[in-house]
Length: 241
Ligand SMILES: [Zn+2]
Image 1 (cartoon, protein in one colour):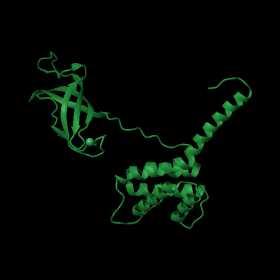
Image 2 (cartoon, rainbow, N blue to C red; image 1 turned 30 degrees about the horizontal axis):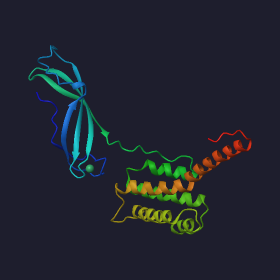
Image 3 (cartoon, rainbow, N blue to C red; image 1 turned 120 degrees about the vertical axis):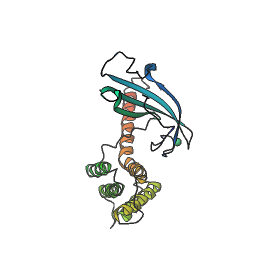
Image 4 (cartoon, rainbow, N blue to C red; image 1 turned 60 degrees about the vertical axis):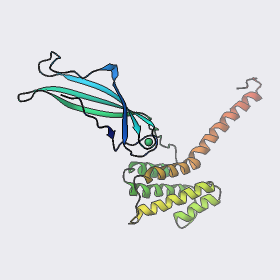
């Protein structure tokens, strides 16, 4: 009986380098500890036993030609079958990409309560692009309201934020684009928001929230640190760290 068959190319997996879903060419394969698949007929075991095999494969992306290291953990179970004799059955198989590592996304914390609530709600629906776009827009609205930006709709509130220097012009433009994407999600448009738009929307939203709420906190932390140093100097401790 053969081992688990692997086609020469694997589809549907996303390349962690170029972000596409290309075909992959298998360039190398080996097993952890140099393990080999046991032949049940030569193993001495009469009926059934388990085997766990960890396989590492190097795959080359056919688009960007960069390498991906995949780990496959397969648990086999040998069963005795009246008709076929011993049969190798795959109990479970798990594939993990070891390289390149997907950047672990950290979510923003310590936002104003209403903004954080809207942001968390948006994060919960990332698998539904239209809903996500709408809730990302709602998060922007919550931020505008928190900043007490005047205006009758989101567009004019965002303009106010940018024009009054609350956010830089580039972020203001980002916010306006985010608003347009939200409109795509909210209205029954032909061109609706799709899964590829989700990370773009999220990046935009987080850039704006970071600027409004995270950066000032970081600056304050540094200010406090410098003030402390000044205080020490004033007392003449002589420390200059
Ligand atoms: Zn690639």
